[in-house]
Amino acid sequence: MGEVFAGRYELADPIGRGGVGAVWRAWDHRRRRYVAAKVLQQRDAHSLLRFVREQALRIDHPHVLAPASWAADDDKVLFTMDLVAGGSLVHLVGDYGPLPPAYVCTLLDQLLSGLAAVHGEGVVHRDIKPANLLLEATGTGRPRLRLSDFGIAMRLGEPRLTETNLVVGTPGYLAPEQLLGADPDFPADLFAAGLVALYLLEGAKPDAKALVQYFAEHGTPGPPKGVPEPLWQVVAGLLQPDPATRFRTATGARKALASATELLPEPDLDDELIEIFDQLGPLPPGFGPDGPLTRASGVAVEPATDTGTDTGATDSPATGTGSLSDTGSFRLPPPQDTPDTPVTPVTPAAQPYAPAPGPYTVSPHTPPPAAPPPPLPPQVRSDSPTPQPSPHAYPHPYGHPAPVPEPYVVDPSVTASYTTRDPAPPAPATTSAPVPGHGRRGRRARRSRPRPGPSARVAIPMLLLALACYAVGFWALARV
Image (cartoon, rainbow, N blue to C red; front, side, top):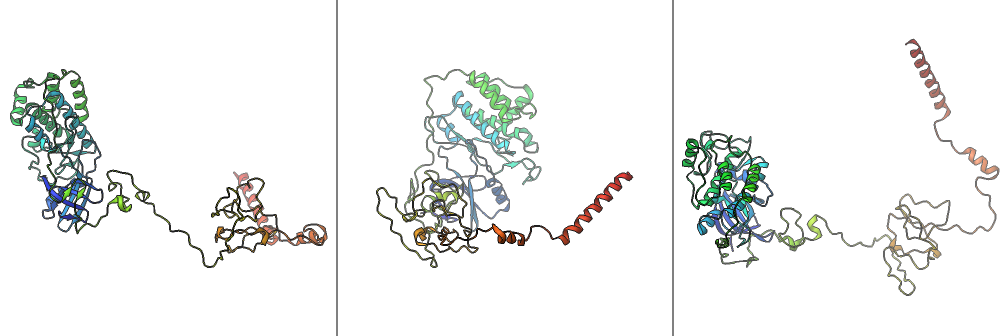
């Protein structure tokens, strides 16, 4: 078992060291997979500020390895990223030496694609070198490059964390303008990308100082041995000492590289097959492909696939399908019987294919309607018997159900506290009664009803005031 960090990340073994911290292979107990975790001690405020800048970078691109999440625990901080197992370009050149031009074109195109995404966010990487260009363990398939380590990257216009006369970067991969103290800019990254391409083609680190001096004294040199002329023209365009004559954007360099790739000769069938191996090595004792073999004591985060309580987009499981709780939903408790509502079970008569009594099932005492009733307001159930017209069929102001005669009994379990019961039908008349609204009493009752609107005491003065306003208005118009 390794050290548990922030109750979530269990450190397994160190796999490298970056500019501002050590890189570990760690098991993420929430996402249920191994990740790369860069750990930094909170001692150097200068390094911590660079760390904060790096973890704040969020670029989603297939050829950019940007931080995915971060955490802090006691005197340490870390951020995590995808675990890339194929090593770096240093490992690849160390295994095979100079690479075929077509293979270099593929890697250079992926590097320029990642740089285009980084520059599109207004970020200058400032540390393009083979050790920061990682590879997926794709075997003999198409390689997949990932641009990593944004420890000294900065956005255009941000304040610099170093003195003006102090150069930050890796010696041998610095652009001439960087050595002169110029502000970081995108063409400096493209110059370093050209040096990386030359490194892949020759199998050794180029002498940037001698190369810049030759460019300045003799112009663009001829292509090195074994490098096709179309590809060399693109690489030379990246290596121009003057930023004004260099490629200005990674997208422009990619377009020129695509045109040059079409002019390259077909690869020879006798060429050595390049295979990218897993460079991380076996897991340490106590760890397996599915995580730690025993549960550590400091783990405070349950797997998202087990609890279903994880709602974060970046913390969702890496594989599988999430439950409904993954979207922030929650389950309601089952309905409970209210103590103040008596429940009288109604047993329906046995009939073939009769549905089981449910929350919207009407008692069998109710005769089935001849046709489906029209839609009703929310206060009246759509499956209740159609009420007979009655002058007293109004809901009770406090929502209590009215008494229902026996012939129209409805299962009380289907009536909620905010639903009006069906009104009682009118009792049959035994004697003739005068119809309201007819005869002398009806006319007298209509006369005694209050009329809508204001009284005469208020309406007459208002009318006089309105006439006076009209008169003043006509008088004013006549004066004009």
